[in-house]
Image 1: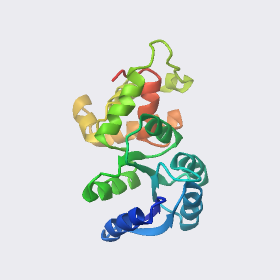
Image 2 (image 1 turned 45 degrees about the horizontal axis):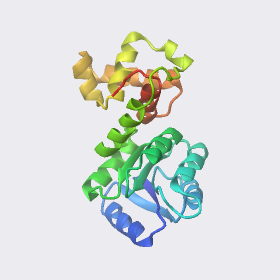
Image 3 (image 1 turned 135 degrees about the vertical axis):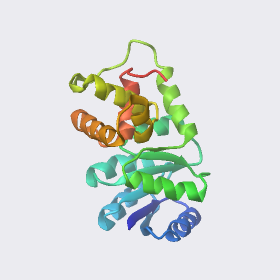
Length: 216
């Protein structure tokens, strides 16, 4: 059972999300919060698997919430929710450790699948959000990319996989593209994450664009 915490300052939205999630046989809402600070407390207490975190909340907002939550509960997956795909929120939320970013206009069926995907460790980014993330780095002046020293540990084949991940490919798509088995791709992904000391694929995408490994 996937344990979900809802963080939104509007009770009506929390009630709607709770109704959608409660109808699913493999997940349950174990707590609710009205700001980021409360979300951290509830998620830690209830040992949440996934937190749906509104970005804009009075008091402690969602960005501050995810920054505090990830260190307190490293295994948790945080999906940021907002009415607007604001570029700054997208980048900063993902860099802080969020597993995905969705618009509140996301259909219910897509929302529950996003929760399952995040729980399984997959990145969850709405198409418009991916565009914002790519644009952020494409517009950056050339020559200012900071390349982490840890990338020197990455083999040529691992780099191929990393670049494919950054372009949004699934493991199955990477396997077909590089003529590998899906199990081999999974092994590569695990090795890359370990070498770069990153928690998930979202942070791999950010690192790839920040380092100039891909240019959109």
